[in-house]
Structures are given as C-alpha cells and as structure tokens.
Length: 209
Image (cartoon, rainbow, N blue to C red):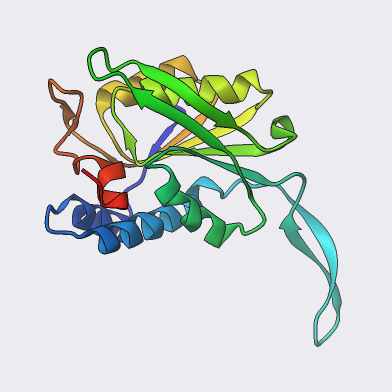
C-alpha cells in the first residue's frame, strides 16, 4: 500500500500508549488526542504548497515562503474526529472546518450518513479527514466518497489507530489519497472493535457511555 504512512515517532507512540490505558480519564484523554493530532499533522502536512512573499524583517527586506492557495480544510468524522480538530488548527489556524456525520449500524456495521457540510471551494483545498479510529474502514471510505462527490480532489486521511482490515479497505477503495496512521493494531474482534485498541474513542473524548 504505497499511499499509507505508518508513523513511528517515539513521542507519538508514548502518547498513544497513554491513550490505551483504561485509567486515563476524560480530560487527559482529550488532551492527548489533541497533542497526537499536532504530532501527526506536522508530518501529514509537510507537502502543503508554499509561495514566496515579501517580508520586511528588522534587518532587511526578503522573500520568504508562506502557505499558498486556498490552503487547508479539516474535516472530522463525527463525533470522535472532533477531538483532533483543535490540534490541526494549532498548526494551521486559517484552515476551514467541515463536518461529516456517520453512524455505524450495530448489526451490519455499515456506515450511514446523517450530516455533511464542507467548506466552499473544496476542490481547490487540501482536505484532511480526521478520525481517531479506522476499524472496518466503512466510515472512512464513505467520508472520502462524500468529499469526492462534492468536488474534492486532494484528500488526506489521518487516524490515530487502525486495524489491518480497515486500512486495507480504505487504501484499496481510494488509492489516490494519502493515509496517515499513528499505530497499526492487530485485528478487529467479533464486534468490529480494534484489538488491542482503546475502546470507543468518542465515549472517552466526551465522557459518555
């Protein structure tokens, strides 16, 4: 899968291990997700286009690079993806934010859309889709489908933990996008939860059951 980057930075892995711990409370979990999004976003956005602009420093005038074009659209998959948005906005405060709402059928595990609102001119932006967990891959494939249907052309997907089954499904369904994974876990269980995983990311971010 040439379009997949699995990250191995020690700081990232350390924070992911803390996320997994059942004793990590809601506030700390939320902070860790944000910090992980910053670390992953730094790598995922290394190819943002730049252009040289004129700047006057205290010493002299110069031409120096700044991000160019329509810049970035961050698109969380609701609701767990919301936990990663602030980390990306720390890196790119000018980014626009869209939302894609999907829920998973408890019996079939198939994704169903209930909300989709994307920034204008999505076809001229880099769309960064964020979701902490890539399990079966169904929601991720659907989210990218929606963005493409609305004209999106340059799309990246970023997740903290992925199962091999979901990663394979997304990479094969959308070989033209870049996929960034914080850690590749072992497998899915019979309930389509990632093993060893970290439980339900949305519940742990928002303190719900």
